[in-house]
Structures are given as C-alpha cells and as structure tokens.
Image 1: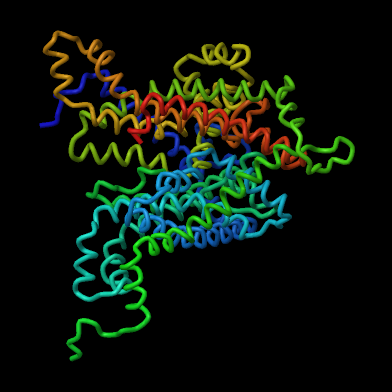
Image 2 (image 1 turned 60 degrees about the vertical axis):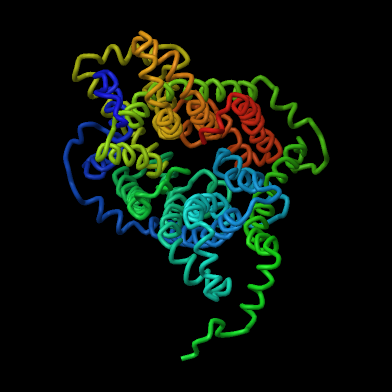
Length: 269
Length: 311
C-alpha cells in the first residue's frame, strides 16, 4: 500500500489550482480565433465568427512558412532518428572511456538555453561565411533533436537486454540480420515516439531558428512577427491552433505508444 | 529447403565475425556519426562563439577585427550592459523561487496522493503543457495580460479595478498595463517553465519512503514539522534539478520579455539585437557567454548538493 491517506484540503486545492494555471491560458487561444474584433484583444469578444479560418486559408503569406517548417522538421527528425539511435546503441553496448562525456554532449544542446545554441551557430556561420539556407536551420534543429530520440531509444535498449541478441547470434544470425529482425521490431514504437517528439520540437522551435534562418520564415517565425506587429489578430490565433495541434497530437501519440514502460516518452525534454 | 544455419558466407557474416572479435570496433563505428555531428556542428559552434567573443568591432568601419582582445568582455561591465545582466539574473532568481512554491503542491499531490486514473491525468496534465508550443503559450499570455483583456475585465467585474491600477502603479515592476510590465514578464516565465520544476520535484518526492513519514508522525511530529525536517531535505535534490532548468531557461530567453514586458533589455534580447541590426557579433557572443558562465557556477554548486542523482 503506497497511499498516504487522504490529502489535506489545502494540498488538493493547491494541486488543482496549479494544474488549472497550466491549462486555462491555452483555451483563450481557441476563443480568440472566433472573435469579431481584429484590432485589439478585447475581452469578452464583442461577437463570434468563423470567418478567420477561411481568411487564414487564403492568406498567401502563411503557406511558404508552413512548408518550410514541415520540411525542416521532417529532415531534422530523420537525421536525429539515425544519429540518436546509433548513439543509444553504442551507449547500450558497453561501458567505455568517455561515456559520461558523450551523454553530456548529447544533452547539452537542450540543457543550455536555446540562445546559446543559436548564437554559437550564428558565430560559426559568420566565421565560415556560410550563407543562410534551409540547411543552416536543419543543422540547429537536428542537433537538439538527437537527445529526444536518444532518450527514447536508450531506455528501450536497456529493457531489451543482451540475452535476446545472444540468442539471435546463437541461432546463426549475423549482426545485420539481428538488427533487422530483433532490434528494429523491439525498438520500433520507441523510435516512432522519439521521432514524433523530435518533429514536434522542431516544428515549434523559434529561438535557435531566429539565429539560423536569416531572411527565411518558418511558421513560428511568422507567428513571432505577427505578435510583434499584429495585423489580423484572429488569423494569428488560427495559425496558433494549427501549431498547437502539430505539437499536441505527437506528444499524446508518443505517450500512448510508450505507456506502461518505465520510459514513458516526454520525460526528457 | 536450405536447412543451413548459415545461409550465406557473405560480407555481412564476415563483418559479424570482426565485430565479435573486436566489440570495441562496432561501438566506435556506431558512435562515429553522432559524435562527428555533435563534435563538428555543436562543439565547433561553441568554440566559434568563444572565438567571436574575444574579437572586437572597429568603431569606425563597424567591421569585426579578428584579433584576440579582452575589450569586448570589458564592454559588458559598462553600466548599461551590466544592468542587463543584473536584471536578467534577478528575474531568473525570482522565477525560480516562485516556481518552487507553485510547483510543490502539484508535485507532491502527483507523487504521493494521485492513484490510477488520476496519476495518468496528472502525468499528462504536466507533460502536455511542457511540450505544447512555446510560442502559443506566450501568445496566450499576451491575450490574458492585454490592457483590454481578461484580467482587466475580471478585476473590474469583481470591483478590484483600483487594486489592479494600484499594483501597476508600483514603480519599477509596474507599468502601463500588465503586458508591458515586469510583473507580466515574470508571470509568463513562471507559466512557461513551471513543468520543468514540477517533474524533477515529483521524481524526488516519489522516492521519499512512506516509512519515514510514518516514523516522523510516530515520534510526535506534526505535518508542518514533518514537511520541514523530513520531506523538504529529501526533496531538495529534485528542487535543485528543477531550478537548474528554470534558472538557465530564464537566463537565455529573449522572446518572452520581447512580447510581454517593458522595453528594457534582458540578456537574450541584447544578444539578439546585437547580432542582428547592430551587427556587433563579438559583443553578442560575449553576452551569450554570460549565461554559460553563470550556469557553470550554478551546476558546480548543485553537484555539491547532490542534485544530479535526481535527474
């Protein structure tokens, strides 16, 4: 029996208040997407309308940033999947010299504030005279996405253990067959979860991106510009809902994919 | 039917033999691509950052002079620049302390009272805000804190409009409206980083043995005494681990004070504007080194206090 008995009323209220504090603000994003007022954030909204969804759909300045964000997120999470899985495989195999350094190196891009990663890359581009492109954005994103895949994969490798791999070898499989028929099926859902989280993280990232994008605009950068110089405010809310869904759904899916294990996805952000 | 245990004696089998005899070779091969990436892209960039911070800018031409100098770091000590650093550190400290207070009941309830379905609800309830879009969260607060927004509306609705105005009239932390004051910046920081405090706190609270709480009660301690003398010391590593996140993230953020806050700069804003319109990459780099230096000191202290066991 783990239960400590009934929680004191004050604690329960504090916990509920804390959770409400975390969730209620997001609801306003949805409400303001339907307001008829587009020049201020007047509350309560003077009237409700659904026209902003159509307006957003027809705004031509939204689509290129959306495509760029999707492209960057897809490439970055693919790169992170390969690099993170390789790293997790090596770390799961053996204790070796410098192991702690490697794990620190993997975590560092996300442990240090984004502005440091961003400014570092910016400095490197300035020294190397590298022009901004989709690939300069990808360089940053893939770097901080590696840890997300790594965290998911390394926990699954730990659970997989060595005995299965030995059994596979005893049955005559070579390393590549073992990888294809034993490791990959066992790793599958963890990699899917890690890949989706990496995608969500990249799709939403703005701080590092502002340093590596130059004149290009990803969807979060488009949103940031709208926040600083608002035009049709409810249109920004419509886009915010899209961005919110693009990050909310992957984490929910990742949670259900890895539920039950000790390595439930998302703990490592 | 081949019936053979070894279908092919090809390259794959050959390599398997090599890997078997030299397990370190496979480990090295696996590590090579990620280490190459992180080493070149990330560590390389960090070195570039350090190098840039020791360069300086020519006052007349505005071009970067690629020669070693400490002049740029010296510029950080100019009062207007040093104020930026002090302001950021003060905000990071305030946000960290407040997030400990707000996170505690949530973490404690989730760790020790929530069971079954509620455990899952708490887990998702903390995880979803952590992962949901950063910019959307900041935007939500822009809506909340706007002068014509919901806070003003609610304050006037319950007849507390004067109270709100009185709070905004406080010098330094007040302002024209909540969304242009330090109070607003503080609230958004607290909101956005709160899950980073709850999670490690919850992890360390889950490890406090129930028997110790029972022993404390048996020895006659009230709940406050148990909290202060048993729970808090045992939860401290989690608190410190969480504070590393809240402190470091506040030090490096530049979006939140830009969207919600007064026009006075934080470190992140200084870095961003210096590298952009001002074109002074050396000073921007020197500013970016400041959070690294502060965090290194902070981490050294945290390690002493045993915070890393809770990560």
